[in-house]
Amino acid sequence: MTYLVIIEYMAVIVAAIYGVLLAARKGMDIMGVFAVAFAVAFGGGTLRDLFLDRTPLFWIGNPHYPMIVFGISLLSGPFVHHIARIRPLLLLPDALGMALFTLIGTAYAMESGTHPFVAVMLGVITGTFGGVLGDVICNEVPSLFVPSPLNATCAFTGAWVYLGMQHFALPERYALLAGLSVIVAFRVAAVRWNWTLPAVREVRGGKPPSI
Image 1 (cartoon, rainbow, N blue to C red):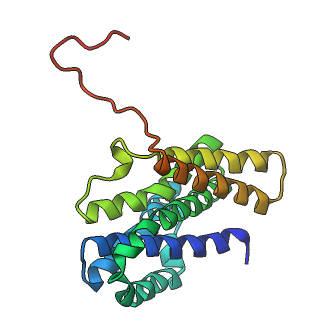
Image 2 (cartoon, rainbow, N blue to C red; image 1 turned 180 degrees about the vertical axis):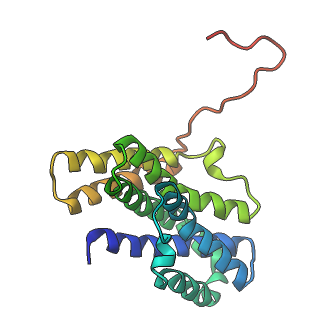
Image 3 (cartoon, helix red, strand yellow; image 1 turned 60 degrees about the horizontal axis):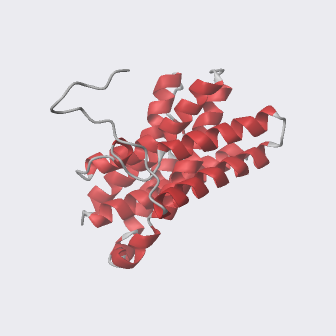
């Protein structure tokens, strides 16, 4: 089993847990929990595979993935009652799932022969779009699209660290570990100190600024 397969397993599990916690905050029933966990775990990877014309989609070619997500959703019942105590931990599966999926998406895109910049963008999509779908299903404005602690920026940075270490022919496990560490640390720090990007707003009551 290669490092990429192991990371994909971990990414699916962690993203499913994040989806369960996200759904539990909205008080959903077990089918709602499964729907959110499924969207978070497979949304970004599905979009990546469609862009890269990879068939079958990664979760269709590996049917044990949706079975794992379904099992996690079913077993979540006894734990979601303690969501108030679990909520502070929501950041960890969020950051870890994003990091794992970003790296796996970047690696698969490079394997498909894409340009490094395109590979990084597809990695960011893989790492963040599942969370966007989860927010939409939970009737919330996706945090990726509004001023909030850095998200996609963390994934973008970590993906370049991963490719940079590969460029210098370092072993893949070290490149993956470096990229993972950067994304998780960057995301946690962004939330801890509320690092955000400036909002782009329409100028009202006057002429727009000259460029």
